[in-house]
Length: 198
Ligand SMILES: Nc1ncnc2c1ncn2[C@@H]1O[C@H](COP(=O)(O)OP(=O)(O)OP(=O)(O)O)[C@@H](O)[C@H]1O
Ligand SMILES: [Mg+2]
Image 1: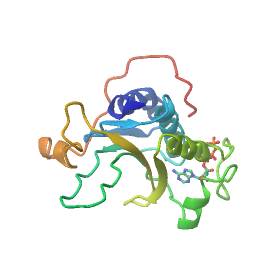
Image 2 (image 1 turned 180 degrees about the vertical axis):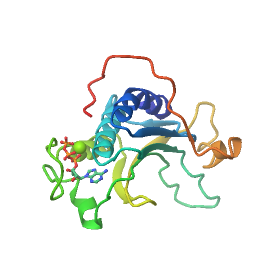
Image 3 (image 1 turned 180 degrees about the horizontal axis):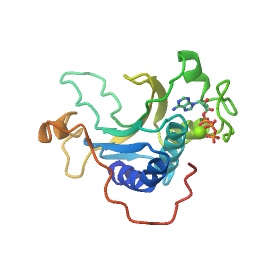
Image 4 (image 1 turned 120 degrees about the vertical axis):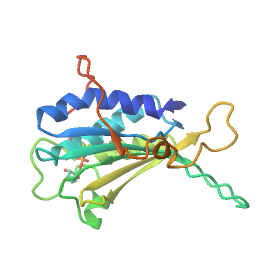
């Protein structure tokens, strides 16, 4: 079922922003858009809750976690086999990161890195992977440019309505706001916690 990734991302930032602020960290939303993608209803919310919970656990005071969004890259002309078009959500932290082996093992049920802080059961990422795959997508952990984790969620993009093919290429938002990398977390309304586990 097509879901609105941008709406869900904004909603998650509103929900988690105060939790990050209470720990002296900041949660920022990237300025690009991800559009619509296929996902089991409720899956993207759960995926982001788990990834944000992991990012917060490794974030020290003063650090920033970025929830970034990316549209699919336009298909190259003349490409014989049309490739699946993935919209991407990224949860990028400034924590200690993981080795390449750990980044793969982290999706195993009950696996936790040696020395992990208490308070988790090691199930979150395996659930995240199952939810993404159920909608035709997948999740990978990559090394972030600044050494932390870049958790990448790829979901099958649904072309915009009336749309001719894939959505516009990356960078459109940055052309509109060339000096901005992230937008501040919007003003927060108090609302009940929606089941997210900090
Ligand atoms: N952003 C991250 N930075 C560093 N290590 C991470 C990060 N995300 C996950 N890990 C490591 O991967 C392990 C598995 O993560 P996972 O989300 O599956 O379980 P958990 O967070 O320990 O527990 P649960 O999600 O069930 O509460 C974590 O215990 C941690 O060692
Ligand atoms: Mg977790």
